[in-house]
Amino acid sequence: MMVTNEKFLVKAPFYCREEFDYAVDVVLGEFLGLGWERIVSDNDAIMITTSSGAQTLRLNDDFFRRIYKSPLTTASLPELPLQEMEVKLGNTGLNLVEHTVPVLYGKPGLRRQDQNINIEVDIFGSVFFMLSRYEEAVVKERDVHGRFPTKESVAYKGGFINRPLVDEYVEILWACLKALWPRVERKRRSYRLLLTHDVDHPFVAYGKSWAKILRNIGGDLVRRKELALPFNRIRCRMRNDPGIDPANTFGFLMDVSESYGVRSEFYFLVEHKVPLDGSSYSLKSMPITKLVADIHERGHRIGFHGSYSSFDRPEQIKMEFEQLVSVVSTRGINQETWGGRQHYLRFVNPITWQGWEDAGLDYDSTLGFPDTIGFRCGTCHEFNVFNIETKKKLHLRERPLVCMDVSLGNIDDPRTYSADLIERVVNVANLCKRFDGTFVLLWHNDHLITSAQRRLYCDIVESVI
Image: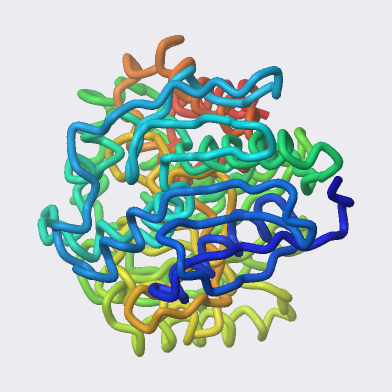
């Protein structure tokens, strides 16, 4: 019988060693906290055993065989429609969203015979496919912002966009390991709420032209139906006071976070080279330096927001991040770790990740869907990313974005607020709780300028905390 500190021996074919080792290290090492050692085998399958060799867990390696023959081609993508596998493994308390799981690679099948278990699903290959964002390097379609379209994803086409399939696969593997080696123990985790805020428009009246303010007032009356907001815009503009700007909701955001014992992260833009780069604010301006200092003094975090055009330009990512660190350091702010998110969730695989790695950033939280909530990477856990071109595991960690304010609908319209909307968010957050993961929420400061928006934000945070 296995003791908790004994290493698993993972026997696998010679091909795709870097990809396979990454997947096993994330699943066994990072997610489950188990020791393992790879052994090259002549078998056409993956075998997990121990030094005693009394028990064996056999897994499919369909994905790795495919990419060995046809790397980064459509032939290596999952075949649609996906098959479903019903999972039954005795009284193991298996933690799944539903009683069946979609099969990305391999085929349905899980059976036990004496001291051996055979899984026909390629768990490690499927995990690699989702975490590495393999399909985003294969599928060439892009939306108007150069982003991988949600509807082109296997998660969307396969109907599992709102379930963390990677985490379910890990649970299946864990149940099998526990069935064969009852004394093995996994790493303990706990649910976490991460509140993040992209600072695209720190102010919507301060420093703005009267023409722009008048256009926004039209939106206040027609779309937002907020009668007090036009007067607040005019008052801010006439007094030239950023402290009373309607979008200066940073104190409100920190108050909400502190009331629940969590801290917010605020991601600031450095460059404003194109109109889509938000308001053209300077990190060196007095209102922004004061804001940054206030955020830091209250115990919240400053983060990096890569500009619209930087996502496929590593040298620009590095330059912008160095500017951010340089400016905030003059205010005495020196964080041990740095992270953030690309503007408009623009991402190209693997250039963006490698750019963040080379710039010296520690974590990224770009990978969420721009038009819906869900699990783009198939997990609610953060993980080290993998460069599919250099075949190297990076220091950079991904904290997958699960929910963004604009993906919930037109939150400018007070009619958007509803119990059904909150229920959608809560359902996804409950899955993060179920798998002891992290619910990463993005809410922009300028999407809290109406009473309805602030009420919606407070209700969502209270419901998912």
